[in-house]
Image (tube, rainbow, N blue to C red):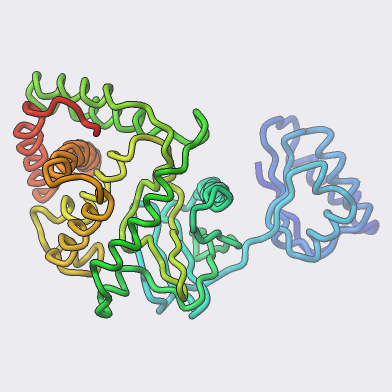
Length: 377
């Protein structure tokens, strides 16, 4: 139940206000939300009304306080007794440059110093706070990442704000003529730091558990022997505790001055690095396999340049391995990638283009799975 408060609540109207609230609440015992977006002032008499509501219903919380009202709650200790949150600053992204887009959100540059990731889900506040905590965790563990410092409201949606002074994504740097091979090396330098970071059991979601669900989802859509072997291969991947980004590509790596930083940390997980490589394969080659123009739409670069970046990334990631080892690792990454893409497309689409993607994943898995003995290196 949402109770909206407006104007001022002081000794002159606290009694009347409490009576109206009690009439509306009645015997209601579930979550009670006090929307203070229209409240301009609350005195001690009004605070006692809120306190009695809290005592009668422990789930009572106050949202959308303006800074002045929030300060009153904070100074009187209410923020320590109950859930009280400030109103979110409103921000417009109209006319702003789009510097990246993923499944969960769109990243805009709002001014030379600032970018904002706007989440597509209107009920994303929990997701936003989760990403902030994940970014802080990664930062503390030595991963070069940008940490969001504010949450804003963008129309009916919410966004995370990052301070990235004149930063450019690696995609933008490539478009402007940057050295593809050098940028690939820089991206792998960060990735190796991340993959060498070992987490505790359960500290982040398990990518293996998620991946097994992909395989189980697509199994009924494959020949029986292919589907069964696919499940076996996924289950046999070691459950390692390497930190994984989960959406690692040139639009999520930013250069600010001489420093390279990661953004979009809501997909952090733990698991074997082969899962990261499978996602990177999809980003650079897999998504655009049937439509080369998809790379242009997704990353802003030609597919040939994307392939060059992928090959350079492999060279630097496996700098101590021979060509046969790398070729085998790519096959494993492709099998995992096609499984993920097939599952995603089955869940999302019914258009002819979706059917083409599903059919291609089917063909690739039927070709690659029989000769594969394991999905890890």
